[in-house]
Length: 262
Image (cartoon, rainbow, N blue to C red; front, side, top):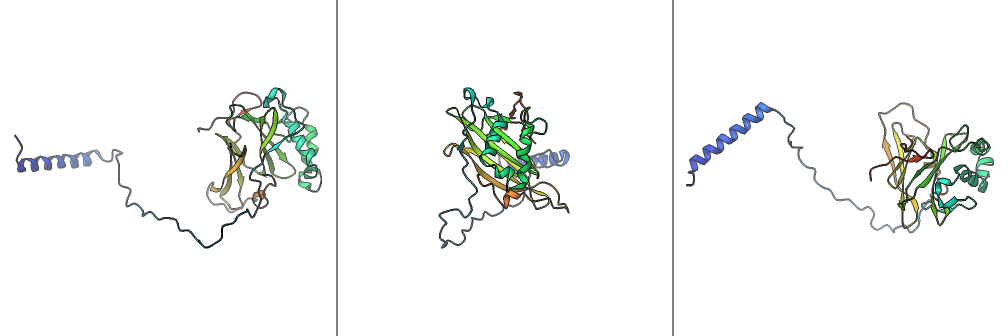
């Protein structure tokens, strides 16, 4: 038998009273709360539609860096058998002026290569510990090499892969570096900024079409509170290098997993 209107109204009033009493007694139980009015969506404004689109870049940064490294063997096609010191020596030999000639700030790097008899990452050798990780998605490890450009505060970062038993360089960057990370198919480089409390964050990501690491992100990010002292700027942002999933830890030359360099 259906209830009469007065009975329904009385039941509804009792329910509302009960809910109000519970809310008052229990307090905030972590339920949903209003976030205020939603901002009105604003579509982007296209500026200067009459402007003729540019057909070529104004500055060449080396968007695609891909080069077969000649004269460096890949025993058995295994990139872990490649000597990182030999790779850096080959680069220096191809452009000795960059390390021993006109660019005097690089002069010490070429001289200190003589300290690499014990291998990368040892003693005064400017070649840093190599890291191995699949960045190209072919299921095989790739090689990330870093070496110090001295005197000065710059570091060179290179990425190599193997194709048909040949060593191929697929990424190159020189900069004042505060940190390097490997994440997924990407290499992330953090560099100091001339703006206090901020840093540059550049990300190279493997591109299967170009078969190279492409610079996919170039950001300035806040790192902390404003400081009175302004750090030295990252030089590459004024003079670019002429060539251009959950994160897993990279494996260093020792073979055991290790976190990416902080």
